[in-house]
Image (cartoon, rainbow, N blue to C red; front, top):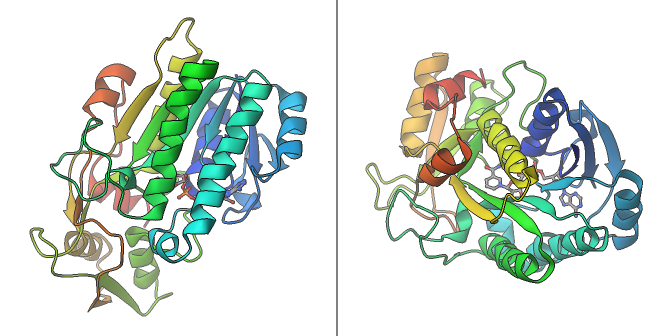
Length: 318
Ligand SMILES: NC(=O)c1ccc[n+]([C@@H]2O[C@H](COP(=O)([O-])OP(=O)(O)OC[C@H]3O[C@@H](n4cnc5c(N)ncnc54)[C@H](O)[C@@H]3O)[C@@H](O)[C@H]2O)c1
C-alpha cells in the first residue's frame, strides 16, 4: 500500500511511519513541522505540507496517488484550546475538512483518524465504550467530535470509508530507542515525570487533589504507542479488504485506570529515584477519570496490546 501519514513527524505519527515501513508499505509523511520534528521521520519519504494548503495537497495526491490516509496531525493541548479555541477549530476541524476534500477530489477514500477520549467529556460511566454519550468539555474535544460527525456525512455522500480511533493516553517510547516523545511544551504526565527523574525539571506538579477518585488525583488509562501503531495497521488493512463495508469507530486503551499519584509511585519504584512533587490547582478542562473499553477493537479488529502493563510502559521510557 502507498500510505500518506499526515502528522508523521509527531510523537505517535513517527511510530506509525516506522511500523508501516517495516510492514512493507510505501510511506509518505506529510507534515508542517509545527509541533513535529523532521528528524523523527526515519523511514519513507517526507513532504513538507500544511493541510490548510489545498494546492499543495492536490500536488501531493497527484504525485503519489495514495491508497489510504492516516491522519495524526492536530493541535492537542487541552488548556490552550480553552484560551485559544480559534486555533483548534481552524487547524483541527477546518484543516481536516480541507484534507478530506483533497481525498474526495483525488478519489482516495480510505481514512484512518486519530480522535480522542476528550470527545466524551466527563464520563457518565467507566470503562467508556463507543456508545457512551459525547459531551466534550473543551474546544480540543469539540474540534475532534466535529470531525467524527463530518466523517459520517462524507461516508453517506461520497462513500469515504474510515476507521476512527479514540485514544485515551498514548505513552511510552520506541523499544529500539530510535524514537522519543518530544512535545514542547510537554503536558503529558509520563514524559514530565521522566524529565524530573533525569533532573531536567526541578519538580513535577499534580494538578488537582480533590477529584472524586481513589486518591483525589486524575485517573487515566495508558496505552503504549507501539500498540497504538499496530492497531492502526489492522485498521487500514480492514479498510483495504475487498468490500470491507462499514466505517468503524473504536476506543483504544488498556481498560485499567491509574491515578497521577499511582503513576508517580510506580516510576519511583522502577527507577529508584526520589524526585520532588508539588500539588497544584486543577487544570481547566480535565475530567476526573478516563478509562477505555476496547472490547470492540479487540473483537472486530483483533486489537491485542502487547505492552499493556503500566510497569512495561514505564520501562520503555527508562
Ligand atoms: N498523545 C496522546 O496521548 C493523544 C491522545 C489522544 C489523541 N491524540 C491525537 O493523536 C494525534 C497525534 O498526537 P501526538 O501526541 O503525536 O501529537 P504531535 O503534536 O506530536 O503530532 C502532531 C503532528 O501534526 C503536525 N501538524 C499539526 N498541524 C498540522 C498541519 N496543519 N499540517 C500538517 N501537519 C500538521 C505537527 O507538526 C506534528 O508533527 C493528534 O491528532 C492528537 O489529537 C493524541
